[in-house]
Amino acid sequence: METLEYTEKGKVITVLLEGSINITNVEQIEEQISALMGKKPKVVGLDCNELKYIDSSAIAVFVKLLKNSMTMGIKLIFFNLNSEIEQTFHVIKLSSFFKIMSKDQFDKEYGSGFVF
Image (tube, rainbow, N blue to C red; front, top):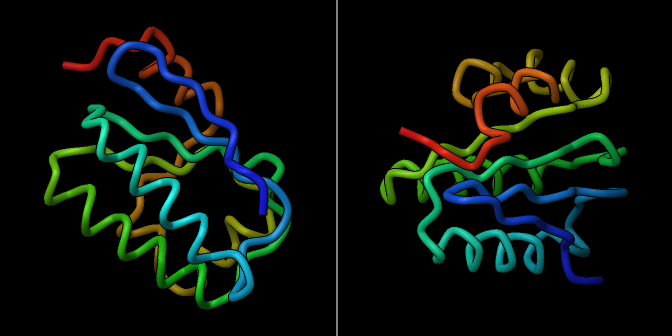
């Protein structure tokens, strides 16, 4: 798997998730996002616009990343989800745990890089 693309702006790191996240690549993705969280941003935004598929291993890693982010005082935000993945989050009740928003909402709240 290739290195994840990301941008840093102030205290906000935005990560572009692409393609599929499944048992074959989930460990590498977890390691890369965890390393970015190690930079101690205030917010890690996961841009899911290009994410096409997730399996149960991806969901487990997302839960683990959420727990780690909460321990570190980092907001983990999923945004720009396609309808299928957003529906998956809602069906298995992940939307009650994860912060999910549109790209416009994310840009409005965190696009400046300044987080209070």
